[in-house]
Amino acid sequence: MCGIAGFVNYKKDLPNKKNILNNMVQTLKQRGPDEEGLYLNKNVALGHKRLIVIDPLGGKQPMIEKFSLGEYVIVYNGQIYNTEELKNTLSENGFTFYSRSDTEVLLKAYIYYGKDVAKHLNGIFAFAIWNSKTEELFMARDHFGVKPLFYTQFDEALIFASELKSIFEYPNMQKIIDGQGISELFGIGPAHTPGFTVYKDIFEIKPGHFAVYNKSGLHIEQYWKLKSKQHTEDFEETCLHLETLLKDAISRQLVSDMPICTFLSGGLDSSIITKFTADYLKEQGLRPLDTYSVDYVDNDKNFVKSDFQPNSDNYYIDLMNNNTYSKHHQVLLDTPELAKALEDAMIARDVPGMADVDSSLYLFCKEVKKEKTVSLMGECADEIFGGYPWFFREDSLSSGTFPWSIAINERQKLLNPAIASKIDLKDYIDFRYNQSLSNVEILDTDSYDTAEKRRISYLTITWFMQTLLDRADRMSMANGFETRVPFCDYRLAQYMYNVPWEMKAYKGREKGILRYIMKDYLPDEIVNRKKSPYPKTHNPTYLKAVKSMLTTIMKDSSSPINYILNRDYILDILNTDGKAFTRPWFGQLMTGPQLMAYLCQVNMWLERYQPKIKL
Image 1 (cartoon, rainbow, N blue to C red):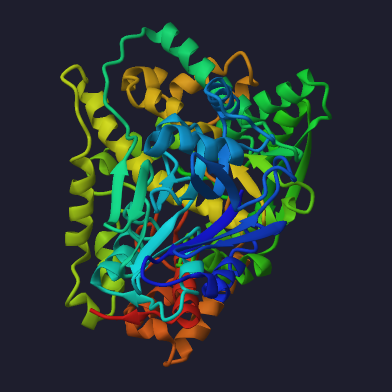
Image 2 (spheres, rainbow, N blue to C red; image 1 turned 180 degrees about the horizontal axis):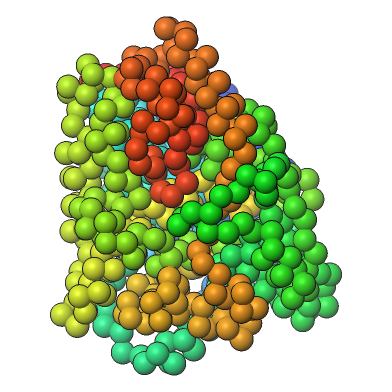
């Protein structure tokens, strides 16, 4: 896991631009605190910051390979989980290897497969390879965009990086927010339209896409997407197939030269990851698995049950710890640090994000990093297996919009009236919603429920899951910490995408089929536990803290938030402890206190990044 950055310019000599490349790379030091490397020649500059996980000596980057009168140079962020299979294929075709590094395998796979290389990869990755023979840059991003890759064309150059802050280090690069950027921030945010950012003319390589940049320009192609196929296996065959895919996905992600841990909340998803990981370590004769959970000061005293958060985690964590080959550690966060870290979390994303849902993960990873470098987590199971309430609630299914973000009128009202008169958020949201749904192929064999849930699954996987993957990457990598997401294995996702809803929601339960196959592996109480989201603080002092922060901001009439948002409405939100915004801002967790925290992040972002608003 690392950070990458670079630029290509066919009209300027770049060896004297080392200072620019170095400035870009230094912004990524948290992603790669262990090593750094630079490569410059006439037309290309490539930089790398490394977090060492596998083969400290053999995985140094930029990595250079001379082959067939050409020079190939790679900078790469990620992990390839089918490294050994690729290595065997390449060895059979004449390639020799000098390290255990997946970087060397990836580079030689590109030399062998060319632009089709991404079709042969199983992993999480974002990489760029300079091909001196063809004088072109090849870039690719993994199937679901676990690893980030941004780019822009500016000053006769193509500029790319793992994070936006790195791109902003390029001389004279402007941070401009136009009408689309406002619509992304306040209509779609904290999600974003795949391929876009809030900043004008700065984009991301879409998940499942690759790009080639040469003297004729930039060419982008899709190498993978979810496909609708008829499911022909019966229930028991489906369960066996699913179990095989799941075990394989987890086992592939246990390769590391650094000790591995898991995040354990006591929910079904994290318990599955923990169970199989602990069993693997025990079979290998290794020490017990270390598991980690996050909780908040006085949460036990203040927890209140709800439809979205029906129970707290601690009982279930203890149950799992007593039933697995593991040793548990709890990270306890307090209100002041949770509020203080809102700015660090925003900087990690380079835009306002998921408020304390972000900052809590940021602080959690910061603590776990003191003892570990790599963790597996249960993220993405709800998207893949249909675990969210909106898969079952009629008001969400019939909302005609993204079901995790139905407060459209409230979002519009939040805009400054002068801006609101020029921007109709509903129009923009409707456009993106319908555009995305046009990619869904409904089969003649799909039942009504399967067709309906196929649409919602597609939206959830390509939009909501991407938001949580962004969160996981930014908050962990901002601490030089690697998170892996086995449920995001593209083979598993593709298979489950076509499993009929009647099987997927076995016995009418969210993630019903997953519960069924785990009945022989996990305690009944874990298997039958109702879905409970990522833990948030219920301590009333958090509301008090973010309310105080936002009040201080609003007392200063020069606060930049006043120029883009509706001051009167924000004051109503403050005076009602968030209840003036009648529905969650986003998902299940971003209610009153989290909305206030988000507004604080907006002001922090405007002050720190100082984007120019051009409507």
